[in-house]
Image (cartoon, rainbow, N blue to C red; front, top):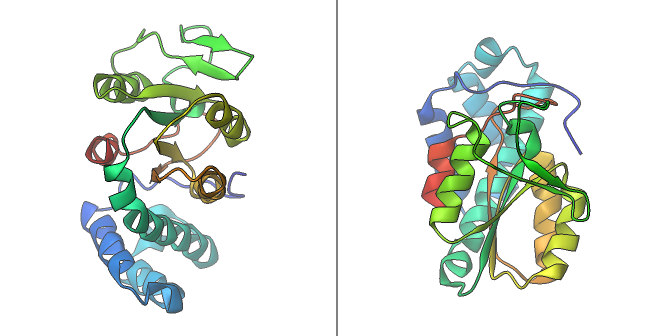
Length: 205
């Protein structure tokens, strides 16, 4: 379920996201999440930098803050998990969305299998990072196929990259399966050319 608006947060300072994470550590965050988000939006001039209106910015960063809070709550279980791990990546972050991308599509799952045809492709880089750490990697066209993949395999922990709304739905799926997860939200959304912070993903993996 994508947002009804587009955003590109790549120009935001890293200190903004650091403050967002610090806010998520506050045990009382859920009682004042809207206040915290509005304060950060004003402090970092988010509307001016991103062009988002206030309501969209608040909705987006309330999701970001909630995701960080859930990441923190699940982190110990995630690190303690023993067994096979899996990474879900969004296919819209591929460098090419046409036949220049050599990823092999498996319609049965459905998923793309990255063939590393473009070294500067974000999906190629993320896939390589995860596979070096022993993860299975699925480049998925949407979150609806994730329950099927989890039902077919015995994964002990999950990492997902998606837009905030998809991540929130994904956490509900993980709760049903009893699997701890960590998530990295997209910093640029859309149907193609989406983007996420590879360093943040690396830190989680």
